[in-house]
Length: 159
Image 1 (cartoon, rainbow, N blue to C red):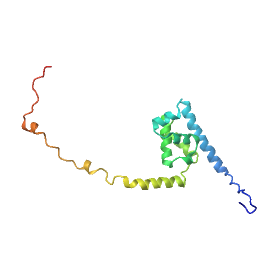
Image 2 (cartoon, one colour):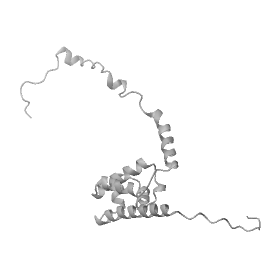
Image 3 (tube, rainbow, N blue to C red):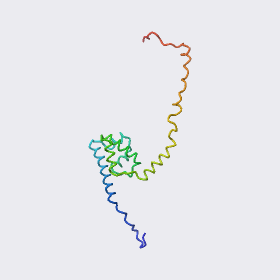
Image 4 (cartoon, helix red, strand yellow):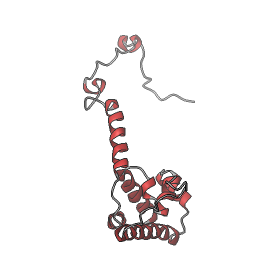
């Protein structure tokens, strides 16, 4: 409440011209992705099934809701795989994405860092496990083979 007892709040600051341009570019990129998919008669389910990208991530990508997507490195992978399935040059799709002014936000960078810090201890400490680096001796042959009592027939077997 303000001092007069009203529940009015100060109006939110209006977006700058640059923010409008970025929002327009993002919407244009999202519409371009969607139109490329639709022009080839593909459904979003088809893209999800082939790429194994979650449907909600694809929906956010096609809606231009980049702020709801994971870290930029993942988004770029989504775009690359999406483009391949749709039949668009992946480098062109990534260039168009770069042109729309999307930059990873601090929240996405912090989430990526937290994920890396959490998963780093799980990574192998050596290039190959010891089992693969040091060959072991072959197990001994069965006694029947070693003694020579088991032999392969020299004549064909008639059935």
